[in-house]
Image (tube, rainbow over all chains, first blue to last red):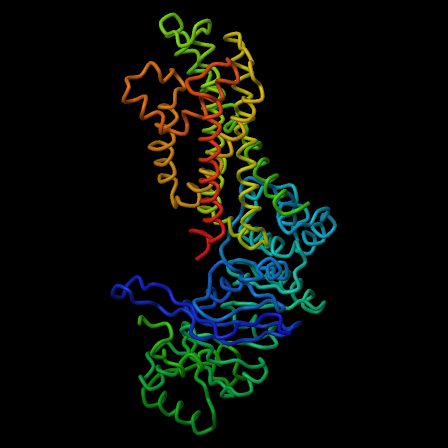
Length: 314
Length: 251
């Protein structure tokens, strides 16, 4: 039985911009099974439908058609069981200003019918580096602490399936390490983890399998290693301050002065270098490296121009 | 502990933590009404024989405080959670719409009764009070608080901004409370306004509650019980339906 199963799930919203009665298709017939124990990454640009998928999974939004289950429990008809199995870390940094950290976690346990949960609450606080903040009011916590508190709140009922919706946005490097160490250890213990993130190097390092979403459709779904293998293989990287010729600019990933170009074979590299030479650009630090997930991501996103219906106003 | 108890406890704890604002302030407000109106009108207004105006006013003020605070509890808690975004912590739980209803209305009853008791205790210094039928006092206080707690739930779900909630409070709740006979007997009104008052469920809550103190009222307490009971049933059914369908909280 899959830990999470999306079965032909579509979601349309009334379109704010289109003519009256038109709809915006946020998810288009999404089919996805995530097996128990997986560390699964859901990637996609802003507006691709990642948060809509998670909202449907959480029961915050209803699918227009299709069915979603958590360990076999339908998120609509059997919502109580589905939500007991599910721990969701929301993307928004929200908190209840009336309570301190321990109170908030005790209430959250109580909503799931769990009393005397202090041993687990202490363990959570310890693992997330919040032990000395147990008595602090939520308002006194820094952004990073509030973010970790969201993780603690999602885990108070020891859910077998954990969903993290961009959990490291705005979190510094050290805290990110603490968080990933903790989540990875939960995954080793058998918890299923579904992660959405914009940090592709995190997804590459952590996720066993990855789905890429664009305009409400899954455009890639494979093991992370296979996605990397299937990619172009190498990347030509150099620095330049000049303007790239149009032929290169279309294919390049440019970060400041750093230009990276997917290279499938030696001929392609030669062509790139010839184009650079002809345009009279001064280049430095030329090197070749293996393609990473970001290259794969950009390649896949460029290959899939928005389909007629997906993400479009109908 | 079942889920609703945790939510109920959280909601009670929430208002108690800011008790200065949620309990002490409304008690002080009621005292101001009592001081001013009681002092000014004591020798001019006689509603029932053998009952001074200040004594007449006290049950009305107590009930008004019960009703307004019960409403304020559920409505303000919900709108704050919606605007802060922390309602998501509840939406992610397996709590049923029953649990939400019982916890929000239950905590509203507690706040209404705590404030009402506070007003009563302080007001008792101003005028001697009779307690002719204490059971009616309790029944109307609890039913009135439940009705207003449920109405607050509906308003809290419906409102998207604080000013919408304030509009509901100022243009619906306040006029209905003031036109319910808190400060006067409706028999002192012209015939037309007497008929209008009979359409106001708040009138029956206040009148039935006052009967518990003096054993006299404008209408039979059984009629008041019937009206309040019916209004409570209707409002509760609407609130439950809104919770069940996730009105404005699930899309």
